[in-house]
Length: 301
Image (cartoon, rainbow, N blue to C red; front, side, top):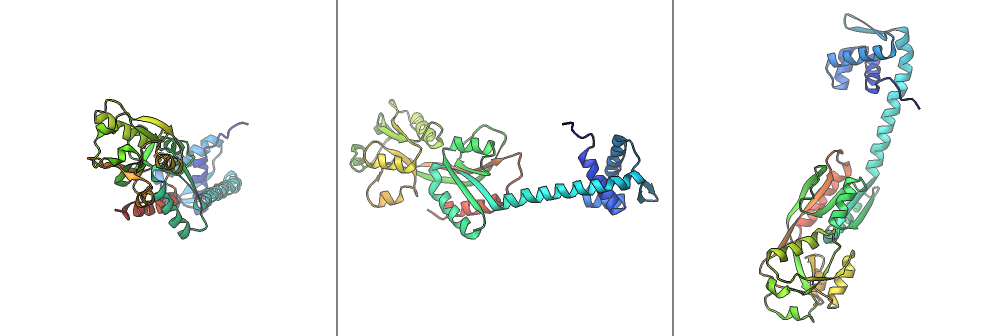
């Protein structure tokens, strides 16, 4: 298949000039300068090898060739306009969101509100680790990613801050020896088993980094690597190790006495970011979803 020799943008400019009967009017409609419009017309005439317009005293008239070509230009313009409308309608009826498991409770709450407000929209939410969500954003598998705030080292990402301070709780089973302590220092956790997410989990990296900075001689042993929050919490409840979770995720288990918060000297705080591809226009539904996210994260203490 041989690609067309005609520049499509010049073809569209020709359509507007021919339809408006004026270079000035066409320039206004296209938000271009008059010299730019004139350049496109001359470029198109050079490309096709025919004179298409006669301009006298700022009045534009079509040559015989220009009149014949206008029929095709009109059809092409409307085909492009229809294609753009198709894509815009598609964007208005579906939204793909990737979320880090750490924030599943808050994102799910925002999603429920979104579905109430926009019942016609198909909302698809994928639960993964932060680094996996980042890859999904870069590969355009999701329109928006909600992740633990950190430097993911990619200039193609656009970051929108959702929350600067979210508290994570280090919890264990009430039957675990570590839970008997009134105050827990980092040194007490040396070698203690940890139920954590996969290596692509930003939360896991944060807790291990905190232990490293705290000078633990023996880092916690990761006894279970889980992708499911529910599974991880169940393992912690059964005494397999400690786990790190957002306050809202383990709120019920803590209040019912099935988990106990390990009272560390310093709170473990993380930020929440929404990630988009920097080189892609923001999905119109993302603009409606982000305020709901901020609302859910600011509604809790």
